[in-house]
Figure 1 (cartoon, one colour):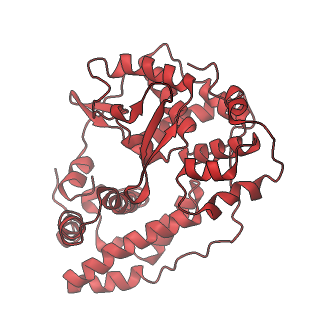
Figure 2 (figure 1 turned 60 degrees about the vertical axis):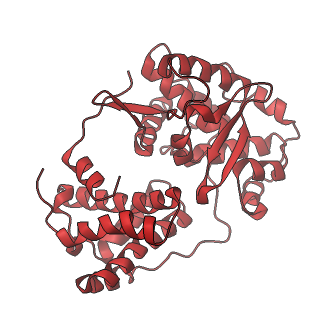
Length: 347
């Protein structure tokens, strides 16, 4: 593996994650992950724009123009303005830390601070998929193959729980509780934990999936639900891997259903599930609790997006759900960039 070009930058990255966030400020693992994800995404973007390897990235390459281009790309991928601003604030935090630790980084911090937060419109439009679009995407995986079985269950659980994609990747086998009222335990933002009900059909898919992918574990296992195999070892699936597989199925599904959007990003599934429940008459208060919203007002966006409520009970909503009637882990090699990210705390 080639040595890094900018040793100051990568030493600061390492200390920011391994010392400052974890030891000095005692941030939660989820918070540390959020910071790491933001900085890793920025570095990956610089790599792509410059057509270079990670070890070649340096402070001078990341100016206000590069950062703005990165933030704009997030919105183009379907991220909200709030997500854009969250990423910017986390990147700013790193540069402020860097400037305190190394005087040479002050000029780079000042450059980053020139990029402003973006104003959020008061009536931001919520995008969501139709039920036909969700059904079309779920019809694509071949559940007779291991990969198809895994991918189908992943999308079913994503839709049924309304989980954020990282929350889905964090689910472990023990987080699925069966019985009279099956539930899934989700780990959300700020370390919040909540349990959401899952449909009977989802439970059946879980059982099939568990037999194929977790054959030698019990219900109390802390193995990650979704994983990939690298060098014979199971590793938690990365959210980017999940995003890619979902988008691939959406591309094929668009040939069968024109309602399928060009970008079927994971958060769109969360919005879609909430909107479908609302359209079937489920009370917004219940939806707010189910989504884990800290403020009820946040959930009102679904009422504003669709003023015509359909007065049906949640049971009826589930009966017409896209989940009704639906039923080789990929191997990866560790690249130099992957190893470099692990060494400096970006993974």
